[in-house]
Image 1 (cartoon, rainbow, N blue to C red):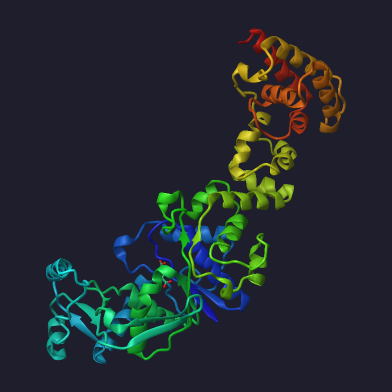
Image 2 (cartoon, rainbow, N blue to C red; image 1 turned 30 degrees about the horizontal axis):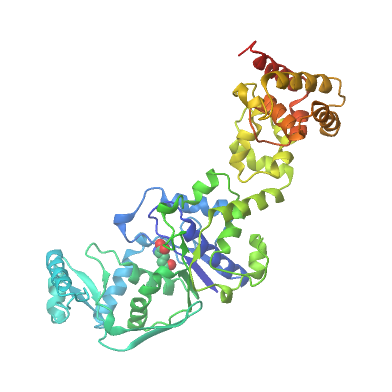
Length: 478
Ligand code: GLU
């Protein structure tokens, strides 16, 4: 069994393309098949520098591996279409020799005028087969000097059909298909010719790709037929849609895998969530690692309708996967998201306490900054609970300091009881007292649990910050 994924290097690696890649990966790994990465760069106008690196980076980060590809090599190298031009040219010539394709010399201007006329008459715009009947010898002679393309001779009638593994039986009438260009004037093949030749030459046994390519299938079937090749089974998997039901694009927010990595998403979460867009296990289960997916995913359960991208749901999965990490692993994953000079021992101590509340790895930095810098600037009014005033808050802070200073060891379980009693004595809610102390020591309203925050910050610093808050309220250091 041999599967392939065939991205075009036209931009950063897109999460929709990754979802299709994941399905190919699962299908291949379930059956001990080979997975092939092929770069489809025949549309030279759309190439984007760095796109191949972005494909490699993104897939490596996700942990997707493959067997043959541009950097890996393999029996069908090269795996970049622009490096395979002679192969396509030879095959196009073969179709000419067989009478299944022909040279077309029509100028861009003629084609544009033709199109305009057809549009004015509200007709289907398509090539009018102007060059189809030039005698082959004459055409071959002209092709030596005149610019030309090669077009497929599409039959006037007949039905083309596939049994799609996702969509079932689908058919098209040959009469609706124009004499498509298979080789362009610059000697490059079109996508249609290149994809059919490569899938055949590379021994691809199952073609799985996004459903946006479904409309191209009848054109491919005609090329298979012209060569007399077998058509491998095909599966067209549903698109990843934006919330508005249109194909997910930059208009809907970021779509580049690298952006999700930089925003602090775990590869496990992205894989888990993406796998569920367009596939359902038929149970309530929703948390799947890649290994789980290899076990349970089935092509039969891939849905034919597109699945909607939902960022909140991705956040949910990210939280789940963050909580599954061991503390050591969490610290390792946080590494790129916190400044190099932050003490790793302290980071390790606080990590378990933020793990419960984190949505992304990026969230951590703001929540724990107070442990690594004394510069926690805040507005002094933020210290005062709604029902209180500066004077009583100053007193509360003074009492808190008095209660905290003798505590030994200075750990959460020892810190909590006296602060709870103090709140009662002051006639404050626990929440108000915690909020005031939290603001004093962290400069923020939300963060890791208070008692643990005090513990990790340490007694000396905690007391100093509470005192500073007191002074601020008293106007001394305002
Ligand atoms: N090159 C196409 C893409 O960029 C893939 C087409 C295919 O898989 O046949 O998505």
